[in-house]
Every structure is written in structure tokens, then in C-alpha cells.
Amino acid sequence: MTVLLPSILAAEAGGQGQFELEAETVGDALRALPVANMLFDERGELRRLVNVYVDGQDIRGGEGVEAPLTGGESIRVVQAVAGGCAAS
Amino acid sequence: MTVTLLVGTRKGLFQLHSDDRRSWQLDEPTLEGWDVFHAIVDRRDGTLYAAGNTFPYGGTVQRSSDMGKTWERAEEIGLPEHTGLKLEKTWHVRPGRQVGEVWLGAAPGALLYSGDGGKTFDAILSLTQHETRDQWNPGAGGMCCHSIQFDAEDPERMYVAISAAGSFRSEDGADSWTPINKNVAADFMAEKYPEVGQCVHKLLVHPTKPDRLWQQNHCGVYRSDDRGENWERLDGNGLPSGFGFPIMIHEREPDTAWVIPEQADLNRVTAEGRLGVYRTRDAGESWELTANGLPDQAWTGVLREASSFDALDPVGLYFGTQGGSVWVSPDEGDEWIEAAANLPPILSVEAHWEE
Image (tube, rainbow over all chains, first blue to last red; front, side, top):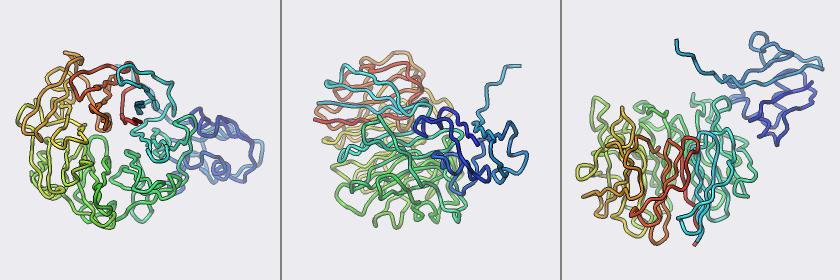
């Protein structure tokens, strides 16, 4: 499967924003990255503002990081940064 | 003489260089996108450390052996599960007494230590789980441990300060901690002079007269001449306000210090609509405005980590504003020069110099 990282994580991964990996679960794939300790806190829990999409589906709507992978998936990491709010 | 200023901002770390402290060269930023709460060079081996935070990915300590060209992130950093706490933000990095030792002040109210040059950090539970912790509360910036200071003459004595828990002293190399907040006001609490809970904004120990401590507090400017056993409030004689964040001191003149007052806790702009640095040369008995070169009209702010000083002769003073300006005095406050402008909001300034 392919893992895609946003720019700040790619910079921390030595400038590499795309990784080709083999893993059994989403969590295994993320923990194999050189930025794993930015994605997970000291308890090993996925940080609250880190969103992960597998083939476009938010893993928090399913099995979370335990979601199994079969190979060939595209995993996208997206930081949840709230935008501005238009004055009403 | 060369001086490098490490300027931590909301959007990365900037460096300014000068060989006369008057003309400055600004480098492109590093750690782009990071909130750099504090950065400092260990003068002994040249390692640059930065307390870096990102909103989604938390806080860490970055280290560089080539002054920021390349960085390595701490591999293990956090608080143990049994504390019930998680690391929120990293605030202040202080190289330890030995090369390779690094102390880290963090939120929530945590002190951490690295013995391997910043690769791994362990929580100092004697402070993080201090018996008074249930009386601590977060300040507006969180419950940050922002000051870590060493006694230059006693290898076992050190100090930390936490907002809003107060100041603490250890006599046994961080194995135990004593609150040192006597006579320090906590006007926002029902009991005005509690044992702990004071909102210290910055604590400094004098490098050559280590029984002397200075603090800029939420509720006044204070000095202690007995290692924090007693504090004297100093902001009645020439300061427009007791509220502020930074404090700077003079290595060779223990009676000299500088502060940058702000209007009030609910109106955090520089006092009296100007940008003024106030200097005492009599241990806080009186204060004088130094503003030659500073703007007459200004409503900006200077955060707790955003000032620094060197030990050159005359002493150089440095601070950065939330408006993104870096101000330098090459002569102890007599004259001020804008070394850089239009940077992102400045969180920290630290001077690194070589004679």
C-alpha cells in the first residue's frame, strides 16, 4: 500500500512524502513510518487531530487503526486544522 | 565578536547574525511550520536544541549539530501512564551541567530530563507529581514549566518555575522540591499569599551571585537574596505596571535588571501605549525608562521566552515582539536598534555569542 503524508510530516521524514509499505493493519503501516512518534502519543494512541483516510474512508468511522489491509490501498494522513469562520 | 540570535516564532526558527550587534543578517527560517517555543545552543559542544510544537502532532525537542541545517527529533518523549498525564507542549530547553544532559520544561506542569543529548527524555516525577500539584492551575498559556535555572556554586541546587504553580527549589539534584513563594502575591486567588499557585512568568538566578533570584510575575516584579526563602516586591518605584513577562539581568552587576511592563493581565499590551524597557541599577529600588530608538507609540507584547541578554561588555539586550520585530540594545539599554521586522509572531529569543 501507499502512505501519503502532508508537508510538515514529509519534511520530518527527510523530505519523503510517499511511502510504499506492506502491513497488516493501518496502525502497523503508520507505526512503520519515521514520523510515527508524531502521529501517536506516548500511550500509542493516534493523536486526536490526525485524520487517516484509507481509499478515501475515514478510519475513525470504522475499525480505526486496527482496520486490516489487504494490499494496494492508499492511506492518506491529513492534519485536522480548523479554518476560519466567516462573520455572520 | 559574533552574536547569533535564535528567534523562535509561530512559523519556524529564524537566526540573525552580527559581528557588532548593530547590523544584522537574517537567515531563511528552519523548522518551518513549527511553533518554536524556545531554542538554545549548548555552548560546550555547539548543539542547538529547540522546543518545537505543532497543533496536530504535539510537542517535541529537536536537536541540530550544524546550527539548524539538519535536525533530529527526540525519539522517546512523554509522561508515564501512571501519572494520568500526557505531554501537551514543550516549552523550555536548558542544557544541563554536563555535556549531553538536557532539561525540558513542558506542559502540563512537567519537568523532563535527557542524559543522552536529547534523544530520549524521562519525566522528573519528584516535581511532576509534587505533593502540592492539586493546588496548581494552568495559566493562560497552559500549565507551562518555563524556567529551569542552576546554582553556579552548588551542583545540587536548581530551580524551576511553573505558571501557575509558582517557583520551586531543589537542594538534591531534582530528587525533591520545596516551594519558594513567600511574599509573592497571587491576586487572582482567594488566599493572596498561598504556598503554591503563583503565576510566575519568568524566573532567573544570578550567574555570579547565585543566592539572588529575580522573577517577573503576573502580580509584580520580585527579587530574593536568600535563594527564594523571601521575596521583595519591586514594582512601586518607576514601573508603570507590575505585569509583564520577560526579565533580563547583568552578569557582572547583580543589581542591574531590565523588564518590559505590560498594561494589565486583561490588557496585555506594552504599558502606556509605548514600547519601553525599564532598567534598574539599584536592585529594583528604582526603575528608569530606556526607549532611545524604540517606537513612541506601540501596543504590542513580549512573551516570557522572548528576551535574552549576553555577557559581553557592555551587555547586549535582545527581545522580540508579537508583531514580529526583533529589538537589540548593544549598550545595556541606552540605545535600541530594530534588527528585524515582519517576522511571524515571536515566541522566543536566545542569544548565542562568541567573543
